[in-house]
Length: 294
Image (cartoon, rainbow, N blue to C red; front, top):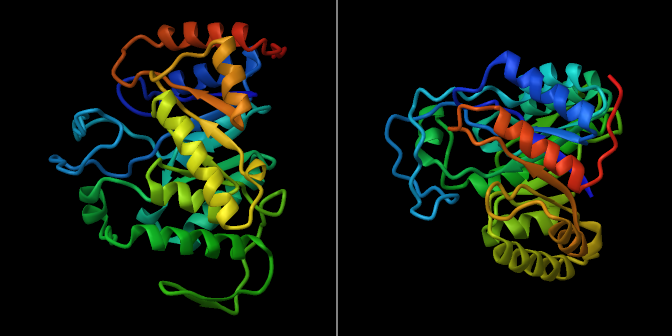
């Protein structure tokens, strides 16, 4: 089991000093990865159902700082040269897939092949409206986006003809260091789990209770079999937030279900970064992480 930590890239704690401090802690304590969340622009009024609150209400004001995920990872990755760099998750349909493919490939190239791309279809319709992106067909668009990005990363001359994008007679370099970037599908809806089973390197559920995770994994395995994939070939990265704690027993139970990576979070509204530091120290001890000499 590998362990990662979300950087304080949102809210009052989103400062250069705090991001580099957490990256340094993670490097020294023996963590395996750094992660960032994603929002581009926050509406002043949100009526969309927020899937990570019991009441479905988004509760962050529009002036909440939310740093760009790829730029944040680039900066933090210099401070933590041993750690993987992941998005949890990047709302891909808000972006142009060709530009996004270039940005992700560049981050991977400059960081020595450390990127894990967590992607999702998104839930906040108002954010899509502000950017001018279609919300209704975001699921089918994001699947096509991923196919186009993988084609761009292949190094071959492109001849891509999809429903939304027609791209031919071009190439994109540099390629990702390992030839491609692993893509983990976020979200825990039926559609999201189906996408992970059909076209993902793995599934990356966030902020869901333990029972929901187990049910989601059962569904993931069923879809893998439906699509002719070995369920064991689709690993899982979890980010439980406050839904269940890191304990030796939970590490064993998660591993038995196919979880390969566990991410812990800072609480966005908690002003004290030491709370996260204490949590990281506890996880490092429970998981028996090997400290690194800086």
